[in-house]
Length: 292
Image (cartoon, rainbow, N blue to C red; front, side, top):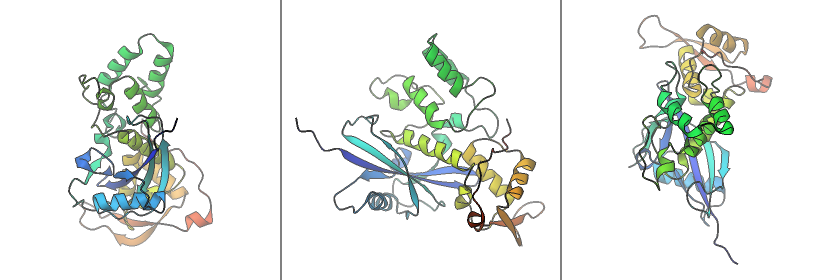
């Protein structure tokens, strides 16, 4: 029996850090990520992605890497495959209608613990009710939403999937029209929030072994700028002395000899990334000095 052709949807997650906040470029007033189907006129997947991003946002698409391919019909179309890409950029004003930079914790409020543990009580109570006494569900709940120590900041996608499976997210309620639990973040179309969760998880893992954070900073920055950008991505506070010791021992930055202007109090030194460090040696994995 002949089947219908499978459509490949190309989806871009473009991330910036602005004013110490992680941001993502969206369309449809925050409801979707830049995206569109692969068409016969596109010479490659990335060429198609570039065409859609620039048409929908007027933002130039720089280097991107393939993120993930979802083909399990989550978006509601059993003939569609979602091919997603991740790009790091600097925020510029989104002047195109419907294009907006949005904070990614608007979509995942439970992932931001920079100012202390997020308010998880309503979510955890709802998840407890869903899990009941079923052992597998209770084990997943304890792993992903621990009541005490043990929070793993990289398990963003798994937490989103658990909330979706428990029926607590707007995306899981589209057919039931059930009441949405407060604190579950902004809804996105199809599987776009799932893809954003995948991108956040990828970045949180990657900043521990590659200096990708410097792609989000200006050429010259203060150590506070660097720390706040790392905290923004990790969703966790960093121990300041230990963080600066880590940066120093890895020899990642060097002073420019200039001071930051326009700051209250004592002027801060400006630094730049030592790009040659990538050629000098491979960077080993490291554990961020998180404040628990």
